[in-house]
Length: 116
Image (cartoon, rainbow, N blue to C red; front, side, top):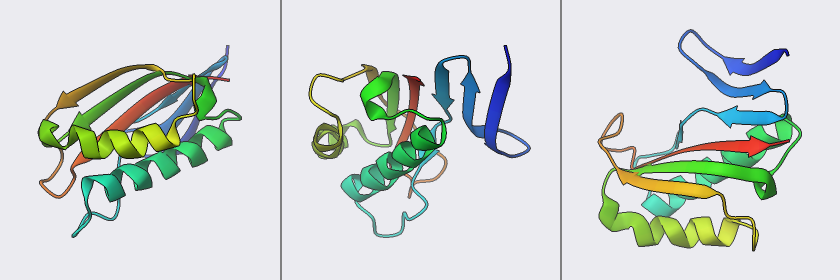
């Protein structure tokens, strides 16, 4: 079975498709200076939508999500954006973890897996 890779660099591909499974790399916001957790979450979820569309699927077919927060106390702020974005009845298996991210300005990282 073929493996398709999109937006591939030396270290990672942002999107990998194998059969009917779509894997996204962990995504962080590009705009971080002065941005809230909510704003960073929305930017990341917009990127998730675009990458899933490139693979021929959408957020209603998510099967798993992992979310890393620089500060777990911001989970409610992130969840408000996530809940508004997620279609009713389509919530994936999900973990939300506090972790030190690439830089203090990056407050959220999200990785998802979806079916086609």
